[in-house]
Image (cartoon, rainbow, N blue to C red; front, side, top):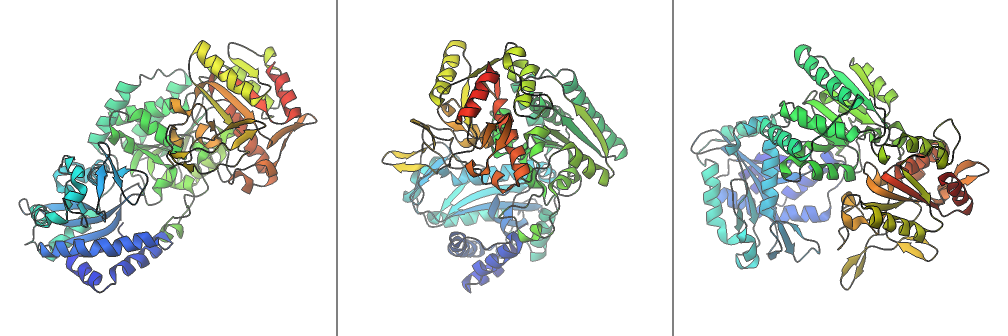
Length: 625
């Protein structure tokens, strides 16, 4: 959906009258439910008028223009999308336009640009619009059948050639070409070669109508690419119930095709039981068979890491990895299969702070959206990993939602432990330690196997244990903690920015991992803390550790969960987790214990524990013995 749609000459008249940015602002308020930022309003006022004038001067006043058009299943918006008729073929033709107000910019690397108004580098505008074009074609089957209908341009209307000379080194293509204020004649020629100036207004409107009516789903070329990428990168060997889960899904897909039935599949398993291996295996196999499939989670860290794993060699494959809240506008059965990994993170609603008002007013439950969008929605979850209020991914909730829609329900329960060294004993030990099992806590020595469990007397000792294990036995190590210390923004230094050492225990200090979206030199982005070697030395929190694994795990129990008189006490006043603190006392205690369960079960070969509270530390030392 676009904020505003009209012919180029009509929009130019509005811009000349000083009304266009106001129209966009009002439409944004209506659709988004909030007023856009002043910088965005100023950008509309400064960019759209000059571009529309150039469009009309090129004889393309009748072209239909979609302003701020949102890409399917994505929060990204295209500045302007031009709809018309190709002068040679007479078929519908679409041009995506990315507008920039920059007057000066320099190329830093292949795809990165530095501009004076921003400290951090940004994507080259040609690469930006090229990716938008690729994404649109890959998610629109009608366009995949005629990819020559889509083109892209980046227009730096305030820049001359000298001000952005290094940016011109970027190789132009069908999906991306760069134009500056010096290139108005070339821009006009390019647009007239893609959009017929002689075509009437009705033809342009029909072209726009067709575009807005397209169905959106993964295309066959993208699915073929994903199948090759996943198959070549990972050779999955599925065992017992893991293979059963895959077969149950495949049978449900065949039933849906043959008889238009709908089946909800729930795969239940503890940490390390292979849920994500099943998810990737399903994605690859379904893509190989040409099924319309997405993988979705509720975690930005997990989704970005999965994109990196499965789409390392080809970025287009990454577009198959979505978030649970990407389906508010989806039609029923847009997909054959939606794989909901880490489904315990399903929320009550997809509404967020900046959800458009038109969606907010008719929003339902997120679980219903996820079931509605696919013939076979698949939920892979561990009910003991909910760590935020409002997370409602459970067998009971999914069962009720499936039954209310007349869907068949299939449940597969995974047994075995494929993380923690394959140690079912450790998984049991953790559950008993935290009171998540009916049986009382028991020292590890009574259950122990090859998995290593230890305690450290100090946080420095915890650090030393991790280093010693990595040096003598190899593998990766990470230190994580309960969310009991503030999490500061990076601080500025003469050399750039650095992480603040927020986690302070006596004389021992360490920073949390980087915040999402805040890049710091020599530290990985928050999404990659668990998988990037630079993550060692920072303390991971629940939101960056959940869903990941490493060889050696060090866990700091903070003062939010302490042992008193033989039972656990959750203390809200010591928590710095803004989400968990909103829960009532009973739920807060459950969420905190689930948090430590997740942190304790990240290690594949060994775990070492430490508590800031003396009584709790004594208990942990006894249980680790």
